[in-house]
Image 1 (cartoon, rainbow, N blue to C red):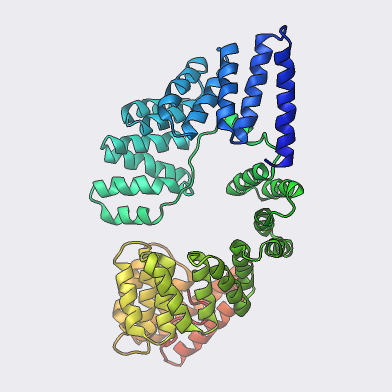
Image 2 (spheres, one colour):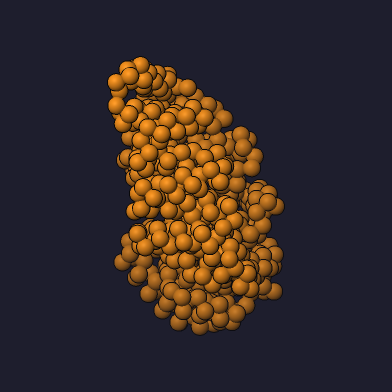
Length: 489
């Protein structure tokens, strides 16, 4: 163990041994000492020795709900739900308002294949804490397990409505929609699935996580702070971890991430570079430096960073996508196309890769292939509006007469206008009007867009692009540039 943790455990053990040695020590004091020792050992992932401590603590003071609770969590994390169940039940008996214990008992019942019992616990937890996402998430999965697919959809959609970041809800929701025959929605949620724990508010476990004075503890706490978007708190935790482990590339990288979110790119860059000095193959810092260079428009330098990240981790999809984007912007489009193909070979439905692949084909002048790609992507139902808009713009502006179709482009943008308006969509409207020969209307739309852009304070390149197309329409010329290099998705 880390030296700081070893010293903590030795000091706690010494204090416990002193209490054991005195026959006059009150049972309650000895119980607490055993329990505190167990907590420290459990936090240090020494579950077997922690188990003995908690059993002793519970024997000496059977009325304290903490010791059966920690024992239950110990067995749960060891994959022994049958042992955890009666201990969570004992916790609830001693502390009936414990929402976390009820949610965890529900989780245990799901593991044991008892969804009806799980539903009861989740329902009681929700009645105690009406805003509980974890209880709703549990109810949704319990409903799914009993084939109540509409009930599952209701609970799981509410979870996502309350917290769109609760990505773990997408997978069971995709299963529920699939069972209801709603395949488009099922595919959409399946694509968005991710492991993002939906946990109950759990003071006892939070206390456990903060016990160890170790680099790993501070890193975990910092990651939790990042998830809460508490950038300052995260930076503080990572700095404390670095005080104990100054050579940790991971902690330097995480501190850089927090500093970047705090709006201090210079300090963030220093941390990423220090991580690479300590560990030259640390791909996450190569990637982060690449993202920063990309944001500064330094695409050639960004490509080198992304390439280094990929050499260290060939399956790093995010780095390949970023590198492909910079390759397109440096007109190395054939190379970008190859990167997108590699990503799509393992992630066929990834929106960013499918769109980037189509845009690469546009840049290469392969308009028919690009059109066919966008049509196919649009038909999957995932990110429908993105692909529909891209298709509309291509149909309005392609220099290939066999691809260009102004009327179809107008039909598509009219459909999109019912869902909302943006400057980019307005540009496509004007392009379609110009392709249909309605130059005065196109110019009028473009003037409105230019006024809006100026009012919104959009960057100069946007206003310049809008003025360029306005001049075309005023000369009664259609647009034959679907996207400039600056704006291409």
